[in-house]
Image (cartoon, rainbow, N blue to C red):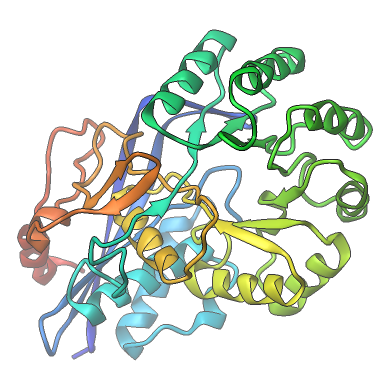
Length: 373
């Protein structure tokens, strides 16, 4: 008998409102939950594989088939060979965190002041792309809720209107009160980027993420060297999975920051490698979730808390979806907190099928494992 039994549970999640990016608008997203059972102890572990279409390097047409193959290999060997998963970061993240859950036997995946409910993680308030009026209202809501770091996604509406939104904030809140970050998602061309960065610098911004599209290393290196605003790399890191390639990227571009999403940037282990290489070069970093459900978000937040960073992180609470799993996470002020005494089965109740009307409890999933091919 294999040491482990793994079940893959696909789900479609539905956004409460369309999530706009410079790459398009999301209304639904697909995730694959990984349920691992130890055939000796009976323990279970749950993880989430959540590739983003048109962004993740492993968002492939045969994603399910490849995931099944990898899970079968882990079933047979009882262990995870990280090198096999380097081109598949979302799969690596899902299996890493499922095995972590299996090992700990609790949704408190890491022991920290965060998972003990003693300390929160500072986070930014994210303002999604939308019309001018929609974004203005969202900014007002975030400030009213107590966020001291606001991140705006830009590149979807007229640039001058985006400058106007930023100016509205700065007219009322200096940088000492509200930290402003913007994310261009590669919306600028290399030719127009210097002028736009100069205009944005008048808003006293903390940083700008990915001003030009990924893959233009020399152009990005020049921007990082000359920009009046610190530049953070995000999409630039996608698909750069080998250590030597990470070193080449950092040594060529010399960014001020890198932004790490475990589902996109190599799972937990790959993200830790990025952090170590960045710190060797004096490059800052922070952690961001990538539209995972609460299963993945719980793992990312708890891992992030072990890193003891003081910068605001890009973590949410899964409020984007109408049919998310129950969560031990909540926002109080501008911090994310672990606030759950709920038993394990309640947390791991999974979202339903496409219509979001059903829910499969952990005990039901475990019982069904005996019927899984």
